[in-house]
Length: 217
Image (tube, rainbow, N blue to C red; front, side, top):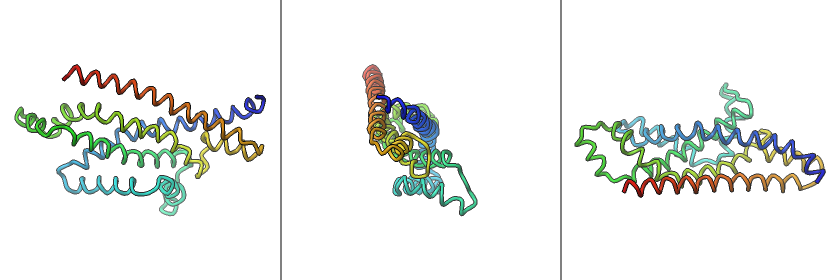
């Protein structure tokens, strides 16, 4: 127990970095993903092509490779980031691409008749998207978005590769220093606790939106 108490401050500090990366990724990737989606379904061909290229690149290459490229590769192009900003930038760009595909699937699941009805009422394309389609899409994309955010918690461990002092890095430091796997065990328990809390939160969120949909129906 005394050993656990001795390494716990370092793990808590690492957990703080993990949570900060997690929250910053969500704050920026969720709206960026919607912007990319709107570009993807845009009637402007260059905007649509650029959006699809972006999604293809960031969903088609490993997140670890993207981290290495941003932190180690961009300096060759004159762009240099510190470790944590490089991690945030990479995670935001990567997860925005995944959220964009989730949003696109949600938008395309809305019946086309609603577009036609909105056009009959004089709504423009963007008014239809803003006031009719996107609000309905939100409830439909909650489950896959929640699954992605749970994956995000675990993916934060990847930033250890570029030296960010998050939870796994702190555990690894304790294990290497003391030749004791307790640090890994505690880190695993903390990750499990985080994913459990998120799962409970998202289940309640889904139930609330499902009740809302039933009332509207």
